[in-house]
Length: 254
Image 1 (tube, rainbow, N blue to C red):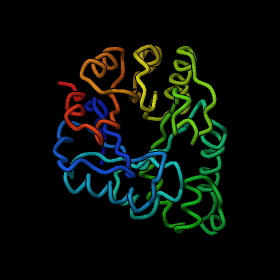
Image 2: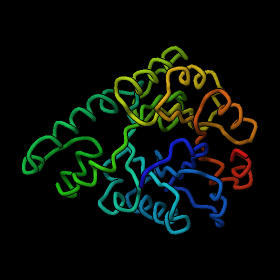
Image 3: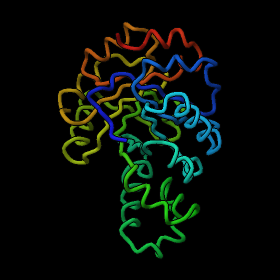
Image 4: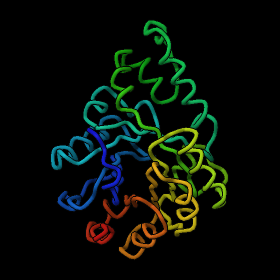
């Protein structure tokens, strides 16, 4: 599936460890779904969530965003449209440079040499699920430049973030994402708390081709509009999708 990034302004973050709303028509106004979470996530509940999305809205793009190789399988790769791997700029080495350099070093080797690989997320998948997963990964893998800005969040703990970025550093990370790494997504993540438009405005100045996502604390049309007007291409809404579908509807841009 080709993604029309210009047509995406609202993204839903579905946590597979949380119950889905009884009425999934609430998703009719969203443009893309990302399935992933930081607590109690398994391959089984991830696959169940992806399939529920695709069954109800077969044309809606669905990404899997894992934080562990245990959440990924041939079934999840085939069910989702893309596997999106965060590169957390302010996280530890494993969650940025180490993971990705090691991954592509291994992919460049002969298939037989991949047996026994112990790379984070994707490498562990190759080792445990079979080397024939490489062909799917090559076409379905998307990198996300990522900045986690809420230190008390599960996302910060999982990715080893112990300091937030200034707006100037967020802008630098955005510039690196587009001009150096070439990732199609740059994601400013506040994980359940509203960070306001400052980081978004700083990043937006340096992004022309890269899609700028903001997630965290979006629970009203006013906040969604503020973030979009600051320069984000799309808001990412998660908590209220699970907890308050009517509030979720209000976050969808008109």
